[in-house]
Image (cartoon, rainbow over all chains, first blue to last red; front, side, top):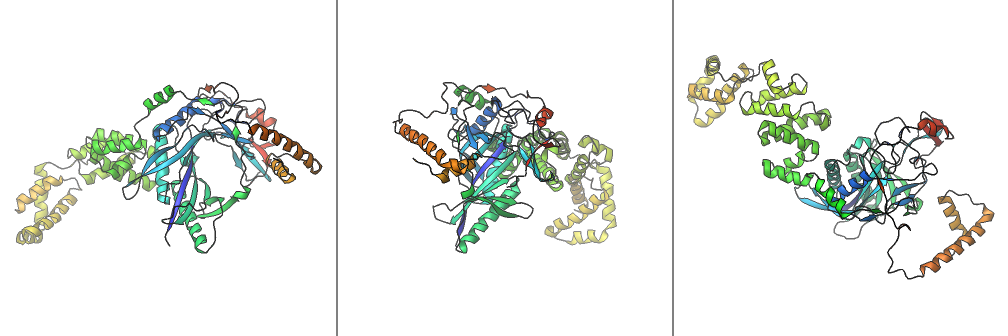
Length: 481
Length: 95
């Protein structure tokens, strides 16, 4: 029997405003506990929320970026539940009139095809505080710095059919919000986290199976693993003749296993109702138009432009536009280097490969775009070979010089293009290898090509890689010809 | 619509309100009366009236995004029943 996985995601994105959604307390990450929790965040009696204009604008920008209708009269509601890190006893959220209505975005599948994922809606809400359970003599410690941090929750339709598609969707959301500059997208700090609704059904059927919700996934890898694990669990249960219970689950990334948190019977009855402390938010068309005009070039448009303007493949353009920082870096390198394809190769293969290997974020790259651009220029004007260029890159990476030119100069890596000196070297190599010269002369045209490589190799070795390969070939052909 | 004792117990639990067992019947009867009134209101034809989130004929004012609140942790921790290391302490909660 062939099974199909059906996935819908709820993505929480922390907005990078200076202050909280309903108060003037700071949202900076990493402060001492409770130093950024004001009377409003603590729900002290007599306080009232006042909505942050920037949070509203951020949500509108997101809506515009995912082709959604913006709700012109948006309403905040109270989602009631009791938990100590939620001092008001309710989360101020939205339900019936969320600020962002239905929209969509496109993801690229591994096959190269594009798939459209529908977004049901996105709404504004506040984050809760943090509970610390360890080591308070049987008590829990509460830090309310995060309470009231603005979030948008983006709810997709159940349009994804594999863990890979879910990851591609999430990466797209990540790239959109970081391009827009409405979130830093830093998953390690919880700026983007996701709940996955997963169900399975027999392929070809239309009806959705019973779903479970796996909470609080905060890395692309965990999301992929958690979904694969949960889908397989459901298939195993169903194939054994069992049935799926609608429940909330947790994913334990250390053990790579899931467990039930609470079933629907025990699930909270949130008793939503419009928040009497907040009036409906009227959004003028003029504001929407104004924000639309400020939207930056978004990932899809940039990818298309990279293909048409720089002649890159869809795949390469996709990688280089996955993050705004990478795209900006690449364009700076291409401009400095004067060759976009070489720039693309160096950024993706040497730089990103190295960053990846060493587990360094792109924003922390030790080699600047100007440095890399300068390096590529020296390859283009034959000052250095591609092989030597890797040495220069290594030196730049280790901070052994301010520019490629400085490194080339300091290490004496300039390619040997002096024909007199090269000729001497070629003569020496030929004199040292009389047998190979004999064989070469006796060989036919086809074999000669291959044998020439031997001499080139010897000369490169003798010159420590600094001989200009083009000139070496010319000289050899002349001498052996 | 009438509410029975079990529903009262459930609502009381959700609202974290303690209702003494000998009060449950009375609360049930009073709540049922209120719901009866709601039933009466629901009989009114509102098909031509737009849903209203707030009775005021006004819209929300927005605040510029600026940090205006200073750190007042010591003041707030001082009025909490228990605190330690800058944290509010509460009875242990683990999901």
